[in-house]
Image 1 (cartoon, helix red, strand yellow):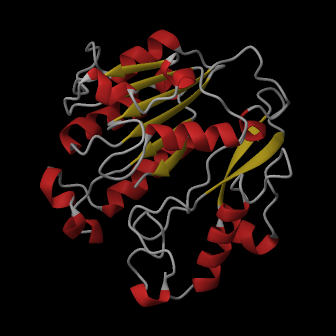
Image 2: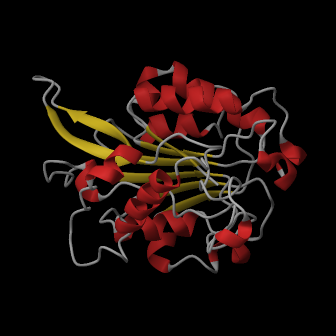
Length: 280
């Protein structure tokens, strides 16, 4: 990481350039420069019949320990916006990335937030509201939002911060996620019941319980039909022997997985066509 500061800067410059607030005057995301393209990874959108490449969709590279690259490898005094929870390195999809030929009118967009906390706050910062706002600014409005949160909250606490327009589309399950296959509160069961391959589905998985998250991740890898429903996944994969171990992961991480396993997991998910991001 320290040997290639220019590459890191090119990646973060492009991530910033794709932010709607930066790129507000255009309806399409910017094309990366040559230097930026060399720093990024890409998903190829192919024509199913001809195998022609219709477009290349950029995504953050799998490097470092899968967070903002400035979080650990650089002295804090050199970093203007240092934070393990910083999300500015992420490259979410725009509407034009999702529906490359201008379609999408007959499809739905779903958000599945596993470990939702409350709408506008949580231990790691806002989750559901971040996704709603970021995707809406990129031209994607979620038709339905499914949220799971194990920490008990009363109804007023849950729904007071939720805008009326979002509350009309949101189902909030104040129960733990159940990773058993086919269980009532296994989110994959619900996803299969409501979504089709034509829909756009975003999943965020940050339950802070590796014994629940790891089985869900393996179920996604093992089930081609399920994987075909998920377009974008944000996952905070808790592993041992990383700088995050001293920043809270020690508390709820019961695993023998290391960063090597994270690289393998995200690579496999991306090879399945899922835009897999490392969440914070």
